[in-house]
Length: 270
Image (tube, rainbow, N blue to C red):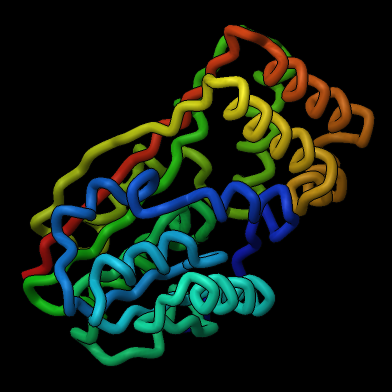
């Protein structure tokens, strides 16, 4: 089959990677942790800068762990992070979620975090993840649901930010509200014994607001999201600057609060 030429809505600007580097197994894969055991082989599909991958590798050592991504510089950063962390049972390789370069039943755990929302055919990717998972192993995926994001205080500019993000993502044949679709996608991919759950990130302390609001104020003006919004005629630069100001205004509010709902699926493969 031809591999879809998907577009990554966020791109790899530092404002994106800062958020990715914050992620750990504990804050981003809690639903999976009880099923991890020393010696398991694990594949992390769409690993990005590798912080979750490295954390999973610590928990499954001495089992071999592979982090897979298609962006070369990001993989280089992941290799450096693993070396600096002293985690030696992990390697990072270039690849594609639609055509994993591993034999059938190669891994005990096949994991993807915030990947499926960016794919034009998430069902095909899940089916491929199942292919390389051993019987008795687990396929795990977690994705945000943008329409379910909520915040305080209300600001119509943030409403426009959310609408714009969803329009840009959908123009890339992606599904920004992936969290609510995961269970249906899993069933369509042939998953049988599936547990579905949800968890949230919440940003409310002064430091959390400054971090979250600051990185999004950069994303809407400087990342691939901004470039795509302008090139597709969905926003102009003045409108993006207005959205950036909204994020900084929200971050400055002593009562500011933002929650990101994430859907999760875990299949016990038989």
